Image (cartoon, rainbow, N blue to C red; front, side, top):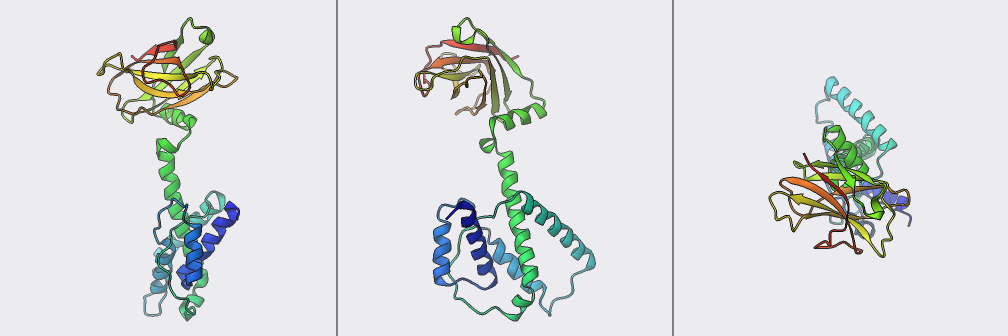
Length: 267
């Protein structure tokens, strides 16, 4: 089953579960489809169906016009968001429920339930997208660099050494000590063969022994001499004073021989 069809089938089963319940076979199918999913279940479909059934019950008071208008505006915005960007939301499955004939209220308000489910799906997916966009672990290096530049983080220039791999090279470091994230932007460095050597960034912390700088990450350089490297140190860097790029064996080193190709001081 293709990924798109996989999502479509899960969405179909979610709607069926919310409106009518699932048979044991359908529940087993949904469980199999979701076994690799990583999005936690918020029961959004079931909660929306229950809320609509309650809200639209004849025993309930009519929704105030102002509230109805706000709901309609939110629904329009959510549907536009889902149509333009959001793939179907994957949710985990709960216990199987016996198949039952839909009640008259469910049939009557099926259109409203479908719209509400679309709204819930869009809201959950928008939350996931927002979390991903603000989590540096899920953003590309260029996105991290652009965000740091928007925050006013000043670049730190790295100069080349006399090493033949770096005669035309330069680089800038964007480093934010508060968030402990940064980005290295390399220009003009010689392309490396990853099976033989790799470049490695080192961060010298004033509060640590200078013989043991913090590993800033291993990276490769493309044919054009460019590289954009995220900096995610494995330990906190309390007072970065100097950055250096060295040539190391594949996979990097724990203790470098310090063949330095780029180096720059902070402040």
